[in-house]
Image (cartoon, rainbow, N blue to C red; front, side, top):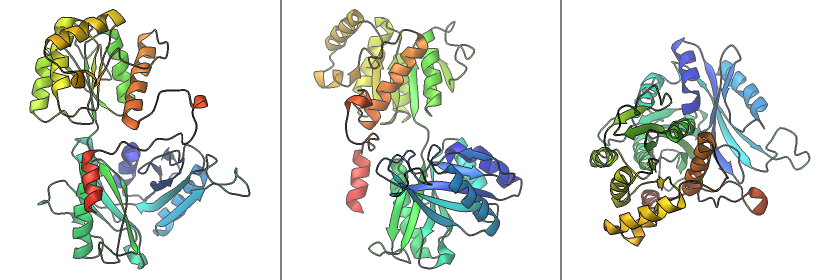
Length: 389
């Protein structure tokens, strides 16, 4: 829903009703992940996508109907054995799409949800997508991380609200959106009620150190991929918002000092991406000492030639970093794409970040077999959560 939130809120604020289709479950090689959404406004305009084009027409028709009738529906789209080019996914995947009417009456909390998402405050929306009693379908609660914070809305009973809210907080903590199953009244070991939890964790951060032309291209690429981008450099003449219009923040500070302060403030986590582009030892080595000493960071990369890399590794070893710590460093940064320009280099770096995040090998798909889409890398928090439930 994040990608279509502006269009959805616009309809909501105008007092109208939009049809919203959301991917709630995927099987095999589905083109869009759970949480991908498409909104159909009252004037027929469309924003977003649930399949990259395969079933958008069918979802459009259902969303238009649902907006008029007010009755939500759960639809499944998959490849047709008889005709792979009928309404379905030609890639061979299967997706479940929940289509619902969104208005002030059906979703009174949307304005507050939009405010939280806009301010990067974590929030989860849990919606009933299946239930023996059709009156429950489409009901939702809005859940915030603090267990003492009351939920907004209701699924139909206090028992169901409490069970789903507790589980939604677990998913929100690891940024996961998925379908949970319960008994009709929220019984944990029961069956019959399905709830889709859509987690809106804050956008991950990309910290780019070094205010150079490559940093400008990387900031643009990072923003495109959904990161909150900060460019930091100690040289005020280079670190200016004018030079980095796509960055969310431009900071004038010594990189190692800024990163240490951010880590101390809890603003660096396992989803944070750190890219060191200065290829100057007086900047690189101190900030990499801090970065490689952090227990959890999503990606750490440093730019430079082979000679620069060898010199940097020697300096880091002399500074006391262990082989295990140095193994976390992607240097020289990026995948081997033959990139030359800043823009091409930014694509190379972004490709490396994506490969590390999803476990991709960085090889041409023509040289690989099996699934194209990799599963998300499961962290310790999610393992703990799945073990408990």
